[in-house]
Image (cartoon, helix red, strand yellow):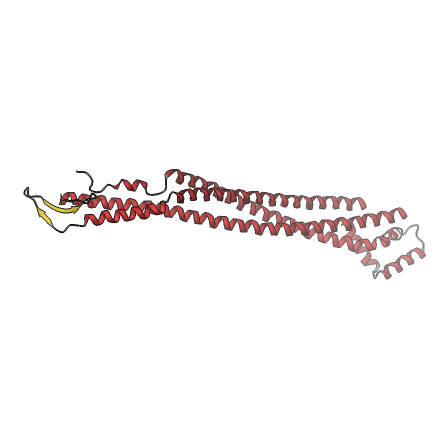
Length: 188
Length: 118
């Protein structure tokens, strides 16, 4: 019976020890992954800092102003004048500050170009905003993952402590049982 | 006829392609890491559940062993009684008195023996 107890004790102890080792490995793996996530976040930040250092935002503001100005220039059409050649023209203020007469057809073309330019600017702006939102999502994801790791860390440590206590108790009571049984067997 | 306004300045706008590529690559790597972490959390939860089960069994084992240890002296004197051979009437009576002082009847003692065998 003593041998059976020792055998059961060894099996139970091995299983418990195996479980605690497994959890220790889990803890290590989680911590390592969290470190990698943090490192990746740093890389993210560096790239975004580079992007922002490129003054993309400021450039957008400037371009926005420039485009609005360009558009407004084209609206300086006080009159349509019919030339000697019978072509209707409008008077516009060019980029060089000089007034110029252009045909209505050309003017329509310029309007179309301005509209296309506006769309391009809006698309690029949306792209930039989308990248910024992605960054915010990454920051949120990393914050959540850090919290998850922290919670798991606490939970695993508590379980390990509790398991360690049970392992010690089991060792103690089994030792008491074996020694007591052996003493009486010897006495018998 | 050329353009009235030079829109080349629009080329300067937006995020350079190299950064977009780099951010896309980093996002993929980050997603992989987050997926890995989710899987590790699932694994850890399973291992915690296994450890909890073991702790429950081990605590029961501790409780049973703790209840058996005080009875070992009594058990050791039971052998000759159980065999009912080579045992005097006085020995039997002495054993039954020991049981009674431990608050046990012969039946409850035999039941305990059953637990020991398990």
